[in-house]
Length: 288
Image 1 (cartoon, helix red, strand yellow):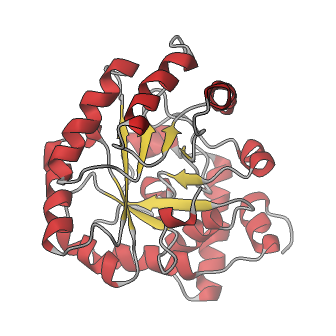
Image 2: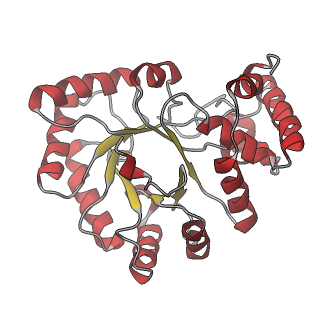
Image 3: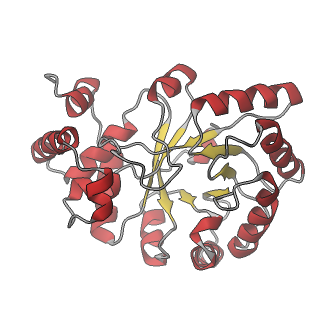
């Protein structure tokens, strides 16, 4: 992925825009944040709020916007252009820095996705393309088609990754990152739910937390995370985020803090350096 995705002075974080929180967005930018992760599926209010925020503060040339389209039930190539145009209208932008396929429908040949994305690239409406919740096999197949047609491959993959592994997908069609594939290919990852949606903050359990994250393995990983966090003097969620960012391939994380305290924990995680032994201990329990 070009280094301009996360500007040279930026953090390895992307602020998610599901929640419209301009006050936190401003604080994120003040602290060095340069990337915002949005999607047509997040709705008009979220994208309109981001567009107004960016315009009001004159940020368009200073930040990267990652957008997404073709979310179920409209997960088909013909929905990409309308989704993109609506996002651009709300964002008050003439193009997106990166445009991701939000989901995959394996019944759709990769050639058809390539055709639709080629039109958007040729029109200058997107600078780079990628995919969210696609398997590594389908991405490899897309790259073959793209190379044959002289198109760029996926510059960015946005699948789920956190120290806690999903017991069940948060939503149907959601995929965890294929770590072996990323290590082999060096493909850039933008990890969503990088802090396991509150698992490491011990938020009040609900149906989703129990269904998706509660397991003996994850509880033990949380215990080790809390132990290392106490030793480092940071919140456990910061250690969990640092584990994601410590992957041996280019990795960034999308975060969605609900208040300034949670934002500060995210920033602490972005600054925290874990050595390979610590990262391995958090995951496997081997001696650091």
